[in-house]
Amino acid sequence: MNSHKLFSETSPLKLFFLASIPGAISMLASALYQTIDGVFVGQFLGSTAFAAVNLAMPFVIINFSLADLIGVGASVPISISLGKKDEQNAHNIFTCACIMIFLAGIAIGALLYAAAPMLIKLMGAEGDFARLAVQYIRVYAICSPLTTIVFAMDNLLRICGFIRGSMFLNILMSVLSGVLEFLFLGVFGFGVWGAAFATCSGMMVCALLALTPFIRGKALLRFVRPRFHARMIRQIISCGSPNFLNNIAGRITSILLNAILVRIGGELAVSIYGVLMYTEGFIQPLLYGMCDSLQPAVGYNLGAGKLSRVRAIERCCFTASAVVSLLSVAIMLLIPETISQLFMPDADAEGLAMTVTALRFFALTYVTRWFSFATQSFMLAIERPREAAFISVSTALVFPVLLILLLWPLGLTGIWLNFAGTSMLAGILAAAILLRLRTELIKADT
Image (cartoon, rainbow, N blue to C red; front, side):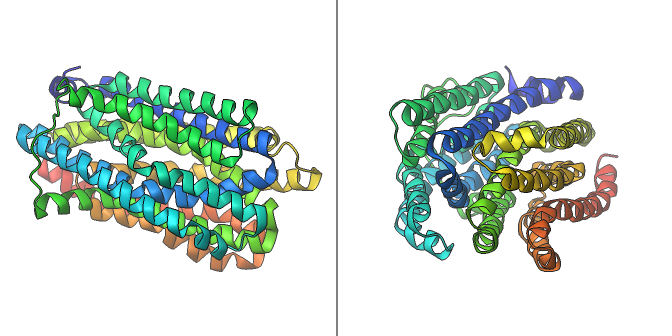
């Protein structure tokens, strides 16, 4: 599909369906795999392995955070450069970003592999619980140089017009990882390391496939002789920092919550938190898929000076995000027992009741979460990284930590209420930022 024609001439509503629906399907496939991953670990390896995976997961996400920073940070200036018809600059940013991601994968992977035992020990885990968590982290760390590039490819393929190709690649990655995990755990009887290696294998295969059109010169973007310079690196870091800070701040919060849960509720509390995170891992990728898929179009039209199209595209994004979020609330409130038993089939009556209560509190999060999520994506797409980072860090770290202190007397109930309280505060912050910028954007278009 011709990217220039798609981004500049297609009606905003049609553009939304052409770009956002495949993006949402891609993320849905990823979310389904994440859910299946949790189910397989819980069903085949038991509750200790399930708790260990959830304890390790924040560190796994940190492993990919720097690659995500570079990938997202590069996609915004690439889109704007294409909108300005400066294709040579777009090629250079693309090439430099790929090199930076590979080098970052080596550095972060080596650091995480060495630090894994110490990190898990600091979390308070012992015995098999700790051993399995370290094992899980180290597989991702070893594979890091060959897997992290996949996080940048999604945006880069969409920028080049390979919208359906990006969607099918994400579906393939989820299916391949799921099949391998079933074989490794259910057939061959591998341990928790098999779950991690299945995911990494799917990522490595799809990273190679995603790079193929760029290597063969069949894409709008192509590899050129890299020209690194300070301004480009600052631009990538600036545009990617909201997502990076969200990943890091969110993982710090997860690590803090896990450490608290280990001490006040043990493995059961960590497992319940894992159920909430797997549930979120199904909803949030849908929101991300819709909003993130529109960023290349928003950036292109911003570069071309078509601000009325920017606003029209974002209205579609906000509306769709609200619909998905409110449907998610309804589902969590209607079938909390089914969701709980999916991940914790061996839970006793007391554990199941605690999980159902936690899910009902957690459902309230998505009454307002969609608004701050869409606003943060909009700020990033129009090159307002400072505002996007402010929403990101506040949502991922500042508000949750503040509410941990305020809700501490409620014990575990306070932890489960933390998510909805954070979402409400983030919505208020996003509304204030959006209202302040609205007048400025309207004036710039007249």
